[in-house]
Image (cartoon, rainbow, N blue to C red):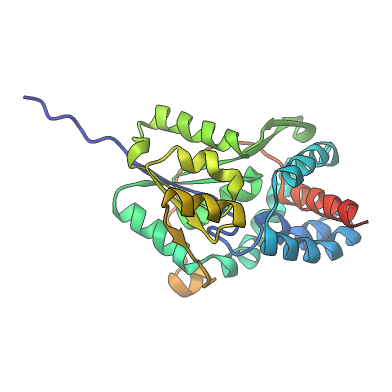
Length: 268
């Protein structure tokens, strides 16, 4: 009698306020200013935008307005320049704000034989290097249409809301994941569709909407509060690279500028 091989499993992680303590997009605003991609006014306002994000998150309407604006703002940007700026500043901007609890969870899932997948609405030029730094197996992120090495202004895939859930189901189909045995972690009510796809959903530093859902459904609620640099956890910082989902997407400066624009418009 043949023994059926066990199905593969994965742990799906949102990025902002789940793995890192800030918005990955806004964290790069100053770097993009020095690179000439956004202006000084946007940089100065990004600190306020970061505060609003940390306190209350971004709801559905804010995310939709941001999506509409960034598609026009990034038109003509050089993709390679975005990637180079992120590569040069990645460890300075992101390394110190990784939650120790999240890094430990990633290690535990890998030790249990599960793939680790980061699923984020930020651009792949930002999310993929972060995923590589953390040893993630795959990355799902927003992708922008690129023509002749520059953003055309059109969005190819927006990794947000139901689209995250669809991406998770597609990965389960292509990779053979058993979603009933998979895990998912997020801080936002907008990720509820993704959390509903897996057998083990977790709310991490949840906003009010997600906390209410988690309480009603009996889901565990985790509190991550200890940002720590990877250098302190892994002295050599020689985290092995793992394959990530190849994609071309909008840079963090675009998302930061879009969010800043919306907040300025809202409070005007």
